[in-house]
Amino acid sequence: MPSNGGHTSPVATSTTQSVYIRVAQVNVLPIPDPATNPPLTPTSGHLYLIEGTIDAIGRYAGATVDWLVKVAHLICDPRGGGRLYTHPGDSSDWYDLDRTPSWHEVVQGDPLLPAIYEFVPTAPIFLSKISRRHMHSATTEGSQSSAATFREEIGQREGGRCPVTRAPAPLTGSHLIPKRMGSDGARDVVARFCGETAALGIHRFHPKLGILLFYTLDPLVDNFALGFYHVTGDTYLLHNFDTVPDRTLIGTPPGCFPGDHLTPPLHLFSVTLSVHNPNISLPPVGVFDWHYLQCVIRMFGTKEYNDVLNIVFHALPFKTGDDSDDDSGDDSVSDNGGLEPPYPSYPLDRLLEEQWKRQKEIEHRKEVVRWSAGVPSGI
Image (cartoon, rainbow, N blue to C red; front, side, top):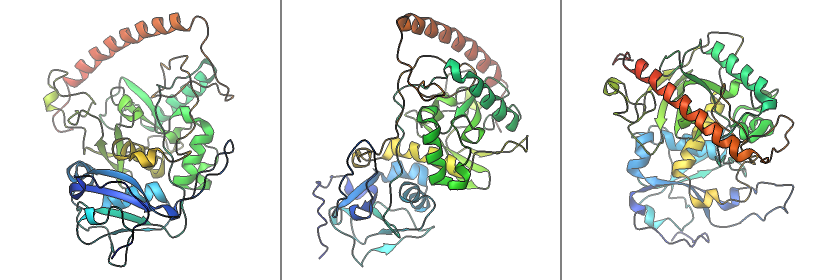
């Protein structure tokens, strides 16, 4: 008889049609925070990390467990070992119970089934932290030169075209690691997902943290609604996590523009990145993986995972400006790391800014119509 591990949550009626990733609490290290006392490490029970119906998970995973294996590693140990196990029988029989020797390891190519999958690390682990988008990031006056350099460098690397649509304009420099996390946050991500050596010299405007995209795709990347799932080499599959599941390749809902029914769907579109300036490297796979994980957590992350103490990256608050050249989004922070609180004329400036942005949107939509009308059906 399996033993109860101390987890007392009720079993949902839909358990038998759901997919879960969990880890034993005893294997999870508390995330330190210098401002608080170290939390105690639970010694029993399980932490459920990912939950979704078999159909919802299958939209991204396909028919095998490969996606689950990757996501479990990205959450628990991006560059380390660890294995994934699942159980015999129904998941409702095991939801509150410990893993036993009757569980078996899953390997790539195994069929995806509605079940509980438990990640078993080789040593206690820290969970990957979560980035929450509280507001659109902004580039302040003090960091405009860095933003311009970022935009110029990724533009040179991508040959001045969006690698997804191949459009030359209008383009935006999208940040895979949000500026709001600051340079320290960016280095932490790169160190965890790519290695300590790769993190040397990284800052929030480093070209290895961004990609040039057609401007309608940028908000999806910024909101963790469009992810790049690594396949091999520099080839990725686009996964649409947005609430509009059938967006076109240019990021818009179908029917927005004349002729867009001829445009391929965004979801599962294959993209192979290339370098046009050998002096400017592409983002490492680990950077794309981190961004992809945030997309997964946004859609499938459990409340338990989101409520782990200190699990959220620190983000500096206040939006006090708009970045017209570079970007995708973040909270406005000066380059010296200081906060920029609202000033007396802030409401008026925001009103003028919104009026300017609406005019810019009208001009962009006209460009999209002109470009979309010429998109061949086979791109």
